[in-house]
Length: 234
Image 1 (cartoon, rainbow, N blue to C red):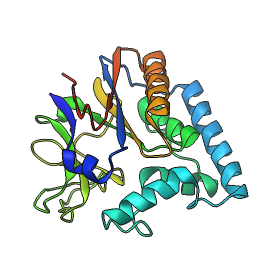
Image 2 (image 1 turned 90 degrees about the vertical axis):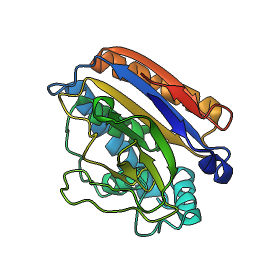
Image 3 (image 1 turned 135 degrees about the vertical axis):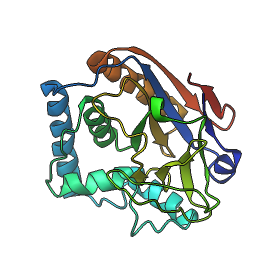
């Protein structure tokens, strides 16, 4: 199994970096108070930050708005995952603690203001690829039952059977959601300028250490770039 960023993505966004953590044999059961406290602290700091400055003009949110605009993904209507989280934190609405790994990802996203998502690789069919949609793919949203189709040219994360995430990092799919029972996962951090390769490298190490600390298992990480657009994950 491989994780791949298609060349068309890099042709449009040559400085894009996809940092990934592959974790095998994790334990994702129960509530860990320290993880919940980290999430609440990240929410509070984000709420304070955006009480003082504009949310949509922040460099780590404006960059995703511009990427969505480039791909005609309606940034004013469809928010990148980090903008959606930041808007919720700004409004003082706490995120639910779904499970340890999701709590870690959400807290990490808010702390660093970068999109972060994940998939249960045991539910993946074939390779994972970030590419542009043809419009014929099928997607079932998280907690949804009815499938829909992405728009042609939309950035989608897919396996060999279906779409796992629409509009780059806008909406997670149901089929590979991370649950308490998940044992083998792939977690990604989407990095656009001003987040460069050095910072992406620091971020992925920090996230890998957090996952190993709180979920255990065997953990490794990679950076997918225009020069190295693929990593073996299983």
